[in-house]
Length: 185
Image 1: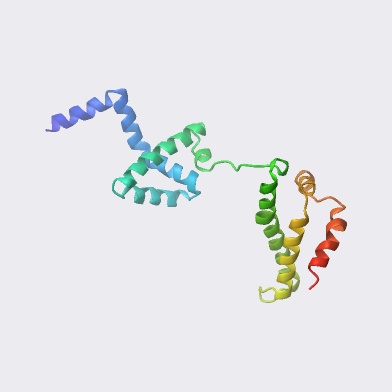
Image 2 (image 1 turned 45 degrees about the vertical axis):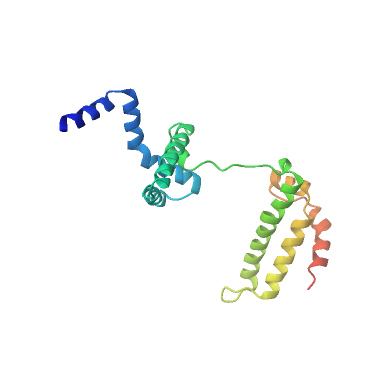
């Protein structure tokens, strides 16, 4: 019996296919961790626990474990065998000038407006806050300002900010009165 088991192990390790299977089995857990870190943005410890728990699920989890190992191998290969680059993909960038009209509107509503609102409320909290609380009137003014200012920004304004780090000089004159009129209360 022992001779038969040793014969199978020797046969596997003696062939290229057997060596590939053995290496894949050896590296499957680290490859799963890399895949989970890449896909989900988890820390290495969270990805390790997640991969182990995932592998404990009968059939579906084990099949998923194999798929994640293949993904992890691809990410490592794509990153030229640098596990840091494989686990933490580089941030993708975009330019305002390449956005379509619907994407630009979505960007203004989901990023620019809330960003202005957060910045306004942070400044208002410093100036008029009490015990870490912001007066309701100041919060309402910030919400109104952010919503109206973001709506009035044009693509050209945003491209100028993207290039120079500041908005055009005429923006305050052009948009300021409209925003003040909309946010009078």
